[in-house]
Image (cartoon, rainbow, N blue to C red; front, side, top):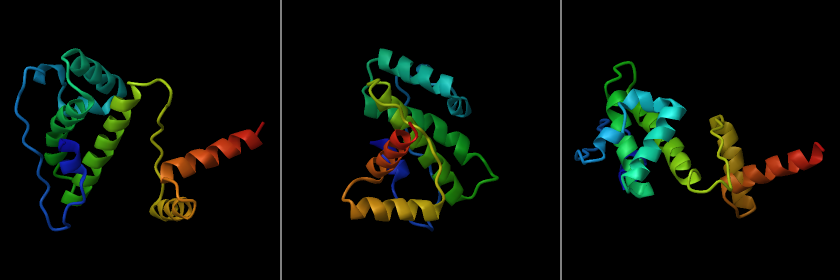
Length: 147
């Protein structure tokens, strides 16, 4: 899966390179990379790719491949910043693609500082649950206490 290749943990010295994606019949369904930053455009592209019969993994791959060249061409970013930006887009895209499949959950894109992530990971590990489950539990308890 392309998103794993782009989003994996690259060596610090590795140059930022976008994956090569062959142009398929579905290429016209994906808008230019920068436009994918808009939530409505991204949701529309997901819907259009679904109509073309692509599965979730291929939808994610196509969208990342379309977005990546815009990031690669941004001379203001260094390679690590480019990787981080594509990883952020990939994570958002994965959440959207899979969330649109089920209305049972809504995903929020919430930034945390590195020290907060370390604390969340440590507490989640202590409870033997995922960091996402730990954060969801904290929010659930806070909302129940706010009633």
